[in-house]
Each structure stands twice: as C-alpha cells, then as structure tokens.
Amino acid sequence: MRGFRWGGRCVAALILATMAMAGAGGAVHAADACKTFTTSGSNYPPVIYRDGDRYVGAAVDVVREAFERAGVALETTHVGPFKRVLMQARRGELDGLPGLYKTEERQQHFRYVAPIGPDPVAVFVRSDSGIQFTELADLKGHRGATRLGDSFGGDFDSYAEKHLNLSRHGKVTNIMKMLDAGRVDYVVFGYYAGLKAAREAGVSDGIAARTDTWVTNNPLWLVISKKSGCTGVADAVAEALRALRDDGAFQGAVERHMDALGGDG
Image (cartoon, rainbow, N blue to C red; front, side):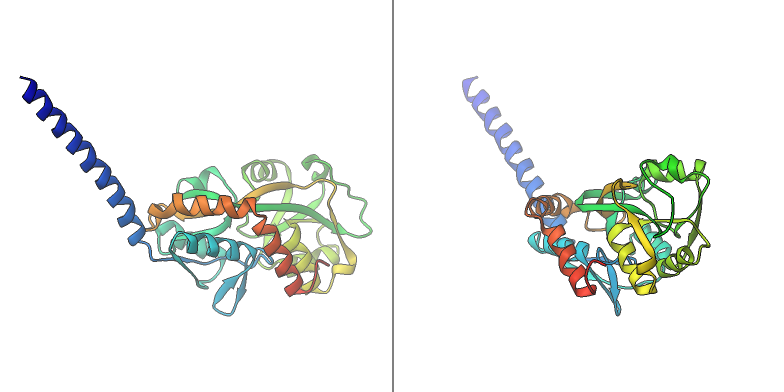
C-alpha cells in the first residue's frame, strides 16, 4: 500500500513537471511565431510620422527597442489613411499599432499591452483670441476642429459628441490654416504635433496653445491586434516598455525628434 502511494506521488509529480514544460514550451512557441511585428501609423510628429514608405518618431523608437529586447524585429509600412490603418490592424493584416488612446470600442479589437508615454492634448487658438481654457465647457458655443479619425480618449469623445461643435478634417496643416483664417475658433490636437503642424502651415506666429490646462494627458499605448500572431510576446514587450518608461526613454525621444524636425516652436 505504501508503495502504491509513492507511485501515485511520482505520477503526480511527473504530470506537474510535464504541464510546466508544456507551458514553457508554449511560451517559446508563441515567441517563435512572432519574428517580425508589422505596424503602420499616421502623421503625428514627433510621436510618429512618415519617412518615405516607413514610419519614424518617438513612439516608434521606444516600441522598436521594446520589441528588440523581446527578440522581435519591428517593421513599419505605409498603407494609406489612418482609417485604413485601423481597419487593417483590426483584421490582423497589421500586427498592431504604437500610440493609440484607450477606448472601449478599440478594446474589442486590440490587446492594450502597455503605455509608451504621455501625450498632452492642447487647445490651439489664434494669438489674439479671447478664448481661455480651464475645462471642456469653455469650448461650448465656439467652432472647433480636429483631425478626421482621431480619438482623444473616451471621456473627451463622448463630451464632444454631445456638447461641442467640432468638425473633422483630413490634414492638420490645413486645419491650422483654417484656424489662422478665422474659419474655426479653436483646434484640439496633440501639443507637440500641433506645434509642428502650425509651423509647417506657416501660421505658427498667429497661433497659441493653451497650456495651463490640457484637454487630456492620456498615455499612448502599444496595442496588438487580437487577430495577430504576435499576442504571445505581449507580456515580454510590456515588461520592456515599463523599464524604458522608468528610464525616461519616451521624453528623450520626443526631444530628439523635435530637434530634428526644427525645434519646439
């Protein structure tokens, strides 16, 4: 009887060891299944912007380093407007995207891996404007604009849909020209990218950002499509992103790209 109990213990130990090895093997196979992470983006300098047929920027730099630490190469490609980029990522034709805000709708399609860094969103007005901004209600009754397809987080999107006169357009440089010409009263956009767009449009002298209060200052997330073969490396990449965030990698990359793009305006 004692021998039988010992045999049972051996069998149980063998089963546990086999399960542990299977789990470890599964993790290895998951990593092996993802040798290259393919992504795209939008024109949102210095966070992410197009350089020929590829994308560069602060978010790309940080995400590339995180994937390299996990043993995965990052490949960026231009596929067209951002709405098409989102659609392809949802279908798994792209593995994921760097630099999305978290919304309930997007969580249906993407695994949110980890924050890359903060992205302050500002209200831009004409330099002679009397509009002050301390809360979203300050924008009521004014004509606003932002870029087509952009989200600034669930709270802002919901408030804007219910209470604000906010039109959406294609190119941010054109939106800044609309603001300068008085066709809209304010623009909501990422602070760094908005400065760059105003400068590119040649209207930076006549436009100011209200920086005492941000519209939002939400983190930009790395997301992986739930239909991608790279979901198995999410935990390793998340750990690498946490370490990079602690080292201030994103802010350093923002400053480098702002310098490369012509300063901070």
